[in-house]
Length: 112
Image (cartoon, rainbow, N blue to C red; front, top):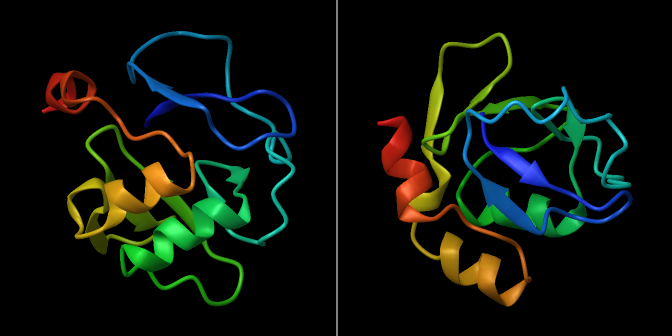
């Protein structure tokens, strides 16, 4: 799982090393998300939801996703890997436009 730096009530501002012990899980409402979509137990913001949709991840209903350190995303409780969102066309560009972080190559490579 990625470690995110989040200021309470804000979307993620940075992605750091996935194996740091930084004090436990984020609260579901850590980002003040209001999309009914969760990633790693945190309700995401509308900007983050746009990134998932650009990456081709179906987000109908109230899905719970799990995002691993290498960027693979899957629905919680399912074995179906929806692919690596950082490798999808346009994802990194959209993140830059929406001021959302992407993992550095060193973070991604450290997990592989």
